[in-house]
Amino acid sequence: MTRACLLSGTTAALIPAAGSGTRLGLGFKAFVEVGGLSLLARSVAALAPHVDEVLVALPEGMELPAGINARAIVGGETRQDSVGRLLRATVADTVLIHDAARPFLPANIIYALLEAVAETGAATVALPVADTLVQAGAGEMWGASVSREGLWAVQTPQGFRRELLLEAHERASADGHAATDDAGLVARQGGQVRLVRGDARLFKVTTPGDLALAQALAQVWDGMV
Ligand SMILES: Nc1ccn([C@@H]2O[C@H](COP(=O)(O)OP(=O)(O)OP(=O)(O)O)[C@@H](O)[C@H]2O)c(=O)n1
Ligand SMILES: C[C@](O)(CO)[C@H](O)COP(=O)(O)O
Image 1 (cartoon, rainbow, N blue to C red):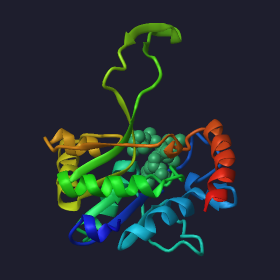
Image 2: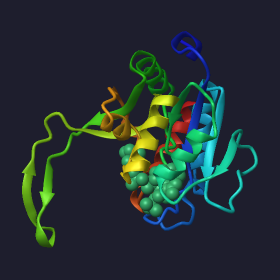
Image 3: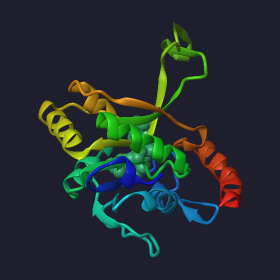
Image 4: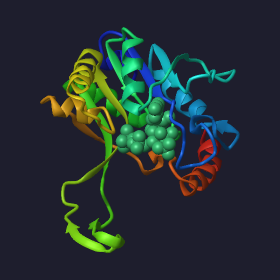
């Protein structure tokens, strides 16, 4: 199946990669390598075959490393700001927003997401929660139990008709509303967002423990292609 079968118009992959990587502690996280390739290079390579253009938001003063086939802009103070800038830097009809920090993106997930966006105009990859959940009380003690029934953990990529997401970002800016992702902004203004079943390998590299997992997974992943 190709994108042309699924969506009319043009499609862009927008990759926020301007974070400082504070929790990982190794400098700008998108440039950290696993298995000899940066997180950013892996995310771009996964999406490039499925879209008309790839745009990346980088930290101020950083340049795209050689060999990454994308257009770069300067990101903002927050992830939301970086995505807002990316949205305004393209005229594509459909956009796929994907964290540079999620380097292992299977192609079948991209197809499923594009199919869902073609139907609803907005969709995100997400996974049903598998662990028991608790709201921590004071002193990091067990507070209130939280039912996991119906709860999904949201991943990226997230796909949208660009005009819809732009409107959601503009409304959030006007209201001073901060969000950790883009699908939530569309849902906030009444948009229908389809949940597309994700993949454990799409985890976000956030902490040193995640990086160790990514190093191990890279061996398997790179052996498959
Ligand atoms: N101002 C920002 C902040 C984040 N991001 C991007 O948003 C994605 C998810 O952010 P996260 O994993 O939290 O990255 P950091 O903000 O770098 O991490 P930390 O909070 O540990 O500093 C990453 O690809 C990151 O580069 C961005 O483009 N612009
Ligand atoms: C967009 C995201 O990856 C969906 O889970 C997540 O919200 C990013 O959060 P972060 O705190 O900016 O890493």
